[in-house]
Length: 395
Ligand SMILES: *Cc1c(COP(=O)(O)O)cnc(C)c1O
Image (cartoon, rainbow, N blue to C red; front, side):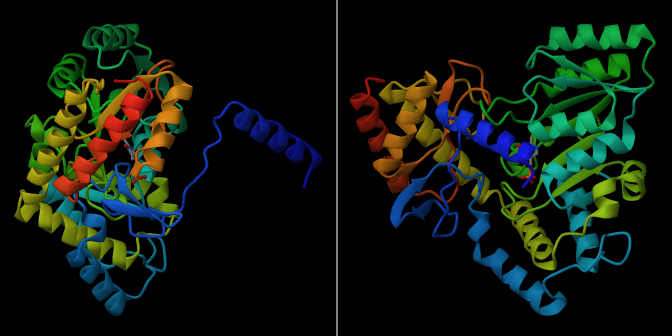
């Protein structure tokens, strides 16, 4: 190893460890369901994005196995050479139907969508208005485009309007985009899409919504844009196949011309091998299930409301979430990490999230209830919260 690299790694790893910021990964010995096994211990799982429990659903497993038997395990090439199976086309048709758009394009992940879609359309002569709490993949996608990035205060519509006006009036930019998460993953609040659309219409902005945490959750499953009835007003609807859908992959849904352009100009589509047959078939089955029935969506909300009420009644600060994402705000970073550790010891897996992921002094343990949890599991979790909360003087 180069001595420079060796020195860099040693110093930085030691620094992270000394500040308690070095993340140790716990491998699961079980499927990522409502209960998980880590180090031989069974825990109530409140940390996955598997909102509807579909990651372990028998119907999806069956679809994946059938696809493997029929098409094998790999797509064999990038989409534009000969890695497009009829399954990929069917997935994209299904996604467009699900999202209420003319067309859709699938990518290997939600992260990849943001690498692909932003820079396919925006360049150094353009500007992007970006919510300060946007996901890391949006931030990186914006950087990749070389457009001027203008951050606006989180969900502050006065700030967005002022910055949109300033950008427009400057005459400096060719195109201007506004980009936001549909649901913000650390607090569970929903983007103010009706106001964003109004501002976009006033200043002729391109609209881009990454709905990774909204799809399968809001709008009876169809997502945040549908929740507000704005399917015709949002140019880019981004989603992931890895959260509520339960598999892996991502997509952009929008007008046919936009999708046609992404198919010839977005680099992860052109230069990275397509999703495997099993992933595609399982995703199609998952979307079919969501479109056929709202049963899982309703159970998700029922469980989320149950857990929220339980924690709130105990006296925890659960923030201002409007979605199943349930933060339990502790404040101090060290105390937050200790709280999460104690929950774990008592049988609840809920991760701590601290600065720099969230602002200093707002450390929290984030709970992700799902449709797959039973009332007994949630009661068990609430009882552990009560025990540890009292023991640590938090409630
Ligand atoms: C999780 C997430 C992603 C990444 O999606 P993957 O499919 O896991 O790559 C992208 N954007 C947002 C807003 C997310 O929350």
